Image (cartoon, rainbow, N blue to C red):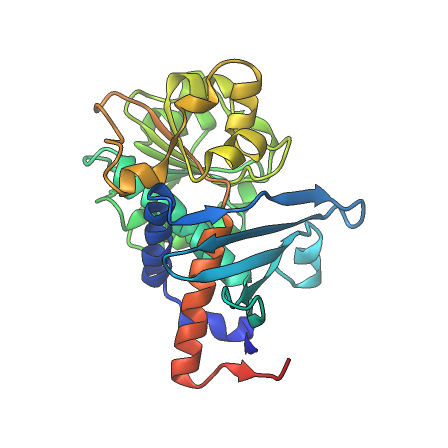
Amino acid sequence: MIIVPEREIAALISEEAAYEAVEAVFAAMARGQAVNFPVVREAIGHAEALYGFKSGFDRAGLVLGVKAGGYWPGNMARGLTNHQSSVFLFDPDTGMVSAMVGANLLTALRTAAAAAVSVRHLARKDARVLGMLGAGHQSAYQLRAVAKQRQFEKVVGWNMHPEMLGRLAETAAEVGLPFEAVSLEGLGAQADVIVTITSSFAPSLMADMVRPGTHLACMGTDTKGKQEVEAALLARARVFCDERAQSITIGEAQHAVAAGLIRAEDIVELGAVVAGIDPGRRSDDEITLFDGTGVALQDLAVAAKAVTVAQARGVAVEVAV
């Protein structure tokens, strides 16, 4: 079995490599070449933690595996990342475990890559202002990845705890963009693209705050009960997702579908746009919303790439099983 420790990941997988892997997974899913299995994700009743499993199989790439991990909100006080994950890969011909990969950074990279794929394929070509709702650890990855997809001229941001906005200001400066802290109303009034990345269980962004033509990448809702935007916003938008089954059970769409505001069958899987099956955005005035719950196949794709690069560079650890 190959072990790729978390400490090696940063040198093995770039943002560009993560983007390529995730975009390819979206297309493979749309073509029926890859499938995600049902997600298990629950509160464990200890340390306020959420813990679960995501798994899947990519028949085209022969990648089979599972990601185990979750969210421990108290970890920052311990000097640790709140999100903790590991990926286990298996030989699809024998079922034997073939690799264990540290997946904390990989999860951050693939989550940002998924948002970036949605922006590349759904945002207006003339989008110039990027709005960030949320300023936690993941927000920096989101900003960096999404900023590459359009010729943005400015970043505006809002966070429930304004003292955290320095992370967005620093990241915006890193990619060469000015940053402005704004109200939620100001964010909706200015932004052409909005990325939401919080762990909220109550909506912050209301439907009437968002302008026609905006693209939203809602990336924080991945558990029953979580919600970042008002359900009525999904009724105003054309809704896309990574996987429909997850979107309506643990994503933003869970609330809109339950309220009867949209139908599950109206939600388009983003892979259909990537694969050229669906046209995506239909007009410059249309609001598009990507409900990104995070699918196993994305984790497995970037983990498999990390294993390949680690072996080529001689940094993979081999152990007998």
